[in-house]
Length: 267
Image (cartoon, rainbow, N blue to C red; front, top):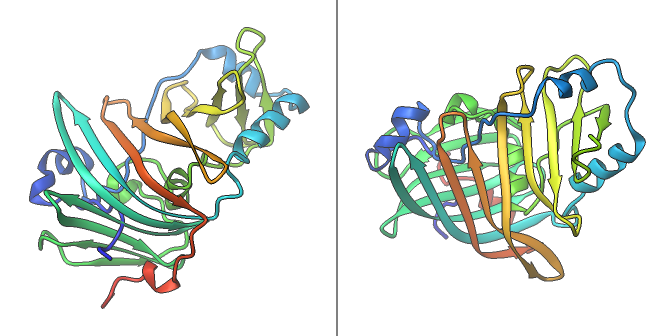
């Protein structure tokens, strides 16, 4: 099996992304958005959690919680400054932090990221850089791909889930009954989750203290597979209007994956 993960130390084939992302590992790139207004900050500070809101966000975070592994193929599309590039992806993922994903161009592997849960390795298949490994259970991908996403959050996306970030306060605005906000003490971040009329999460955002989006993820084109409701497309954007779309064309949830899959040969 071709090494699977979206690593992205950009290769000459990924020049435009490398310039805006810094190191290359196309892995996936998270994102930054802009958020609501100062009223959220006012609700965030000093108010006790709304137990109804807390129950809702717990249910959102439990969406597809029964999925522990997945394998699949799909497409990754990058859009920035009028430029658009599309890649094939192959992945194997296991909750909470095991991953192997390869980015391919014209049928040829370009970059791979592999995580055993203890070590993470980024490897170029084009000779653009030497393999790079780091001891980490859940690394912040920002230093590698210039986006505030942890490896476990990337795994969550490939399992059809909503990323989990800690919170101890949750609330709902009367004018937005389908949107739940949450925050953690001593943190300036505010989480925002939006559900559709059937209770399925369709948007997850993280805002900073100035109400600018740090992370924004949209879920769409849902379909059923093995009694699970999965997003066919996951879209991530940032404040510079970089857009990444992941199309989960063929996904197999809860499939057995050998431990060796998450280790790169020779790494």
